[in-house]
Length: 173
Image 1 (cartoon, rainbow, N blue to C red):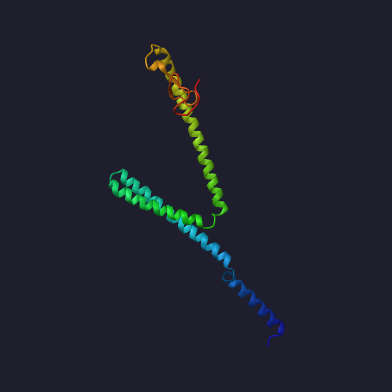
Image 2: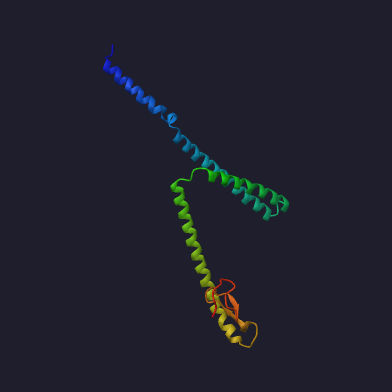
């Protein structure tokens, strides 16, 4: 027959194992958080599927495989469904900090790409202006070409006497 000490150790071990197994059932908060994360993932996947359907629908319309009225109606239904999903996502707990950091990183990359593209567009416009300027100066005969000027900021053609560039809003001299 086992001793009392052995029985107490076995009973203590049984209680510890039982508590470890029952822990997920006893604490309701982590289970809710886990369900919210799973629900968020499901909603995100559903949103992506709807956005893909919208892209496919737009492609079908552009290629002429569906009529405009049908396209408009189906697109409106899909956009409404996507909006409902976005509202539901807003009611859930916020996304994980890692996801927020990833979004910030993507936004920074997009901003950098846009600034690079804008500066490349400006350089192209300035080069085009420089290439056209001698022809305008040589015209000098009062024609419409001779009355054109170019914005020093973006290189777009402006009329003499304009105070601001119509393209970028830069103040002209």
